[in-house]
Each structure stands twice: as C-alpha cells, then as structure tokens.
Length: 324
Ligand SMILES: [Zn+2]
Image 1 (cartoon, rainbow, N blue to C red):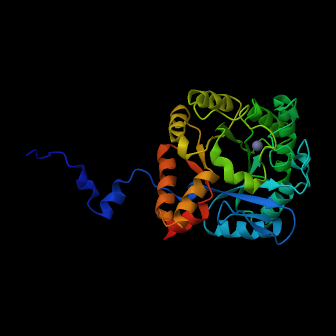
Image 2 (cartoon, protein in one colour):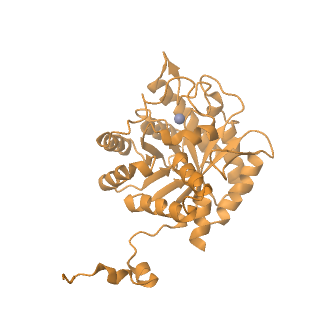
Image 3 (tube, helix red, strand yellow):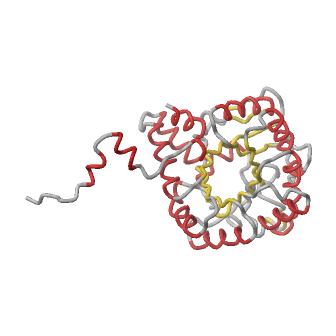
C-alpha cells in the first residue's frame, strides 16, 4: 500500500490552523453597495427579482445610507431613475436631476459615506440605450460630450467618485478632461473597463428600468466570448487616466478578473451583478442551497481571482456575516 510522505491535510486539521494559512480574507472594506433612487417621498418600492433591494426616494435613501455606514461599508454606488425619460436622457445632465439631488442629500446627511455615481444614460433615455441614438445605434462621440456634462453635475453635487458604465470608446479620457477642466481633478474615475453584454443583468433592468426598447447593447458592450479584447479595453482606460478598473459581471468572468489583475497595478473592482445575486436568492428560497455560505464563497472567489473591490447586492448581509 502506498503511504504518502507529503500530507497537505496537516494544515487543515482545525479552524485555528485553517485561519492561519488562509490566503484570501474578505473584508467589509472591500464592499461597495449599489442603491437605486427615484422621485417622490416615502417611496420604498421592492424590486421583485432582487429580494431585499428597493427603489428608494431620497428621504429613505438617506436612511438606508446611514444603515450602510453603520455596518462599516465604506461606499455606495448610486443609480438614478428619473420621473421623465427622453431621447437624450436630459435628467442625467441637470444640476437638479434625481441623482444630483440624491448625492447632495447624502453628502449633507452622511458625509462619512463615500458616494460613487454611475455615469451612463440608459436609466434616463426613453429608448434605454447608453447614449444618444443616431440611425439606430448609439453615437459614440456625441455621447462623450454628454458624459462630460453629466460628470460635472455629479462632481458639483458632491460625488466622491464617478463610474462610467456605457462602454463608449474614449469615455474615460473625455470624463477625465471634463473633470480636470472644471476644477475637479481630485475626483477619481472608476471605469467599467471590461463590461460584457451579459444576460446576468436581467434583474437590474427591472431595478433601473433601463431595458433597451429596441435592439440590444452588443454594439458597445463586449462579447462574452472575448478575453484578449478585455485586456485591450483595460489598457486603453489606463492610458486615458482611469484610477480603478472594473470587470462586469464577476462570476462568469473570474478568468478576466485574474488576467486584468496580472496586467495592472491599479485597484481592480468586480461587479457581482444582479443575476448572480438573484440566482443565489432564488435557490436559497427553494431551500436548495445555504444562502450565507454560497454568497460568501462567491464573494471570496471574486477576491481570490484578483478583485480588490466588489460591488455587490450582498454587501449589507456580508458585512453582518463578517461581524458574526
Ligand atoms: Zn448604460
């Protein structure tokens, strides 16, 4: 009978030694919590496909932000849903738009909480695309100009960081230039650098009311089959001045997170998207999986793959679980 000489099991014998040799430790510092803000007051509209998530009016958003801050989560990322949508998503570039008022209210009430704004147009346009549509497709360079206007209003409102998500060519450079030209050189840009055209965004589109009314986003978001192209996108965004690089989604793209980690020393963020969250919730509701264990395993795997920051709807739960 073969008797092994090497015995890796020695370092797994009890929880103490397992803790000592653990290579990846998820921390509350890694978490960014996405929130959705709508017009009105006292509005807390459940997002049915994302249990525990809501569209909140500004008053209740502030309440929620206080709770998030108490849990030790350092940052939120904010998505605005305006009352009125139009072809150019004009609410997105108004100083008195929904997101701008929300950011102001948050920074007044909970100044310690770091507020990141999603920078895009799909929640604001009546066609649901991520910019100005010309002849059935999003016009890249016209959208860059709009993005420049949008970030200035976010910065004026007090946003700590802006996060462009529309996958327009040159969006990071355009935004960096707009910020710098207007005295906001201290505001960092977290770029959704490798954002895939993914079916895992399904529940988010209910949350943000941003489903495209015609066509899809494959002329700007990436083909899930491509990895080298993601590295090219990342290189361009670094060149244009991105401060943090994001990969989205996370779970089916752990290889991309790893490869991005290997080509840059910038912080890497990953978006654990709505579909990844909702699958866990649904299976847990059916009693098929242990929600806490599965969620923590997923978040740990995203960090192990190379992400420093994780945008996740599990942020509040994970913060509680980490404190247990
Ligand atoms: Zn968009």
